[in-house]
Image (cartoon, rainbow, N blue to C red):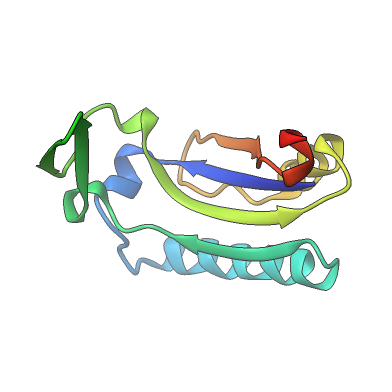
Length: 122
């Protein structure tokens, strides 16, 4: 099963990456974790996202399109980064997330969402 593992944004992540010694140490720990995922054959893709201030949204209403410039409100609803994993089941995904270093300074959340597969549509 494929899952998308979403690192939820925080006020800190919305400020952008600051190359402090603590941030560099956290990035190294995350790199080691990514290596473990890769070596286990689970990691399909991963990346961090720049702050929403550098993003845009496109709102759809029938044939009308409206472009909305960031930053976006409700930081807790934003995504700061993601992984795409191939795991045997949700329990395995949860077990890997529990091993993950804290992705943010202070409290943070990671959300795990299964992807639709062709078998789901049959």
